[in-house]
Image (cartoon, rainbow, N blue to C red; front, side, top):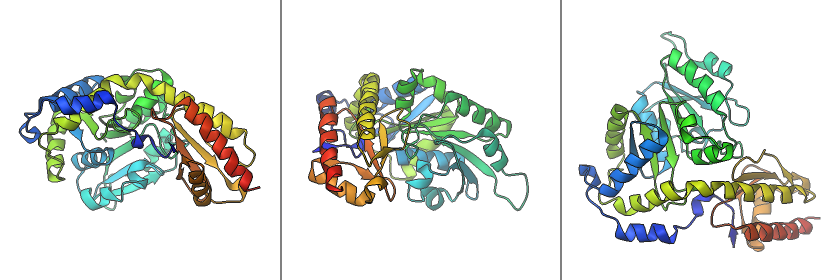
Length: 343
């Protein structure tokens, strides 16, 4: 089975498994796990932030950021298809007691002028704008890279209005790899950032939340409140460290495979690639086959290819390090067979 559902399905490498087995551990709630400390210090340095916190998932990292930045009744501004709004089960309302105000973007990027117009005036009728959230790369925009220049313009507006900016950088390493820019070019344009280690980098579990020291101290308490204060967590921090330090430089391979895949899909009559493929996500419209994404995905499974629905007629394919170039070519062959069955 060639699994192109997500880059979250990667299996840990042998080096990661060995690191987990040999990890030096301690009680992280007491701040005594050396493997966690090493991971957090390294991550903070890479991200250009004062401090970092190891969390169990990207969603937990994003939610802790909202909880730490905001107070109940605040409003957060974010792009209308962002992960925090679309895929996190309404957690910002359930946990932080904040409301969302979404802004239509272009390939996931919010126009800075639109954003400034959405910032609430000082009026007793309105909630205070407590946080601006960006996502880079943008999942539902097909892995689009939000340009640094766009982030910088938004951050400048936010600073003028004294509103913090949080970046959901679940795939921020992909953005840096795709643009050949230092990671800090992106992280300088925000107050806090969350990055996933369990997607393209391949760790079995875990994300990093980074920002100022006082923010991370408060975030650590929120992690505890959410049940995320773990004990001998070095067992998962050690493979996460391998992911962070050894897997970043190979992400362009996934991007190249995605472009080969997109080119092949574009040559199949009835299919249309609808996103500009910058990173490791390819979104395909199957409406030309007079079918739905659910039916198409079911048929793909019969020929040994897995993908996910992304709308009524949209299907998402995601490359990762467990998928080789040969796998991409085999997947295209299988997809050709499926397409021929609809004709």
